Length: 337
Image (tube, rainbow, N blue to C red; front, side, top):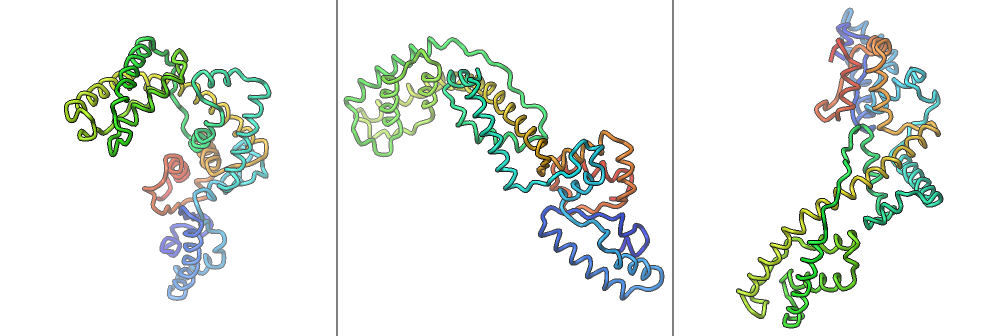
């Protein structure tokens, strides 16, 4: 209001951005009320400026960052290379589109017997387990680089031999251990691992690693062990030592699987991108990224919008994410913040 009153800018070149629709609606209402009140108290040229603004208050943009980006794109859709009648997609609808794209992608994998299915089976994964990872991945479309180098697994034969030997020790020990371990966490792990080793085909890395993943910190209650403190301490040390063997192998295994997982969900994300584009849909992230690209890559468009909006007021600017900040800083340029 002060800028308008002093002639720093006109109502049609002023934009105010906040981060929720509720906040934008409140800001719009308060602005209009205060604009009229200030106009009633002002004198001279300031009164004229405020009166003119009050007559055309609808020309002032007040809204969310996403609606601001939508405004930019609707003014220049051809240059932004988007459908001129694009539809803004709310979060709930975007989630439905995301799931629909995933379902279609998975169905095609099975219909074509895609080789990635065999790769996932090799590492003990099913496509259905990756739906959550896919949804998370697609929330970060602005991240260009997801490093996932191919990792070669180390020789697992020594680990298999060590595990088999340890399992024999565990099984013998279980004969003397109480059925009720109380608060002790190591005894139940012994029982679980012995059962798993009997069932597993340890020549398959996925089955071996499923057992090695169980070797994590386990609290020992000394008084619950038949041999008391000495036995409990000895078994705890043995367990800790084997964890030191298992941990780097499990880490290497997860890196080995990670490359396959990221490769698959990248493909699924690309299907989701094409799905939205084909339907003329833009989600919140699309609005931001398309606007940033439009302003960044097309200087004449950037200059047009700098004349179009000479003053940009941003609520809680410190909370903007990098893409939001890029849009605002590209838009404002040498104009006033």
